[in-house]
Image (cartoon, rainbow, N blue to C red; front, side):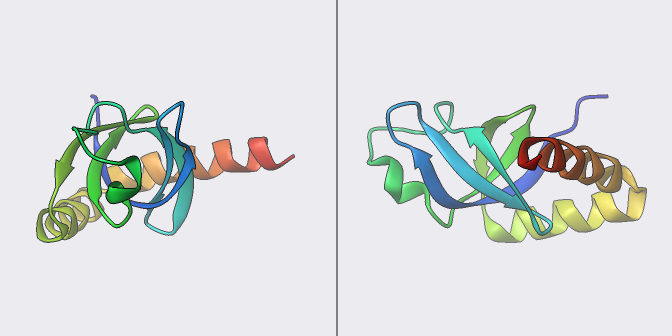
Amino acid sequence: MCLGIPGQIVEIADTERKLAIVEVMGVRRQVNVACILKDEPIESLIGAWSLIHVGFAMSRINEEEAALTLDILRQLGEAQEEVEAMRASERMLAS
């Protein structure tokens, strides 16, 4: 099953490559934001919520939709597996 998990864009990592840092349930990860970037400065995405899937911000969502989605995923136990995979990836990059 493909899972898009809500994440909030907290900083811009690389303007040219359209990379941003998103936070998903306390875990930060670099993602490509080209799919959600319109005719606006990339910096305008800071604070925005998006559905994240395999390193890409796939679509923008509002904060309420993000909270509801995260709550449902927690209830289903789906989010935990995705967050654990992100944490493992983060640990590998740090070492």
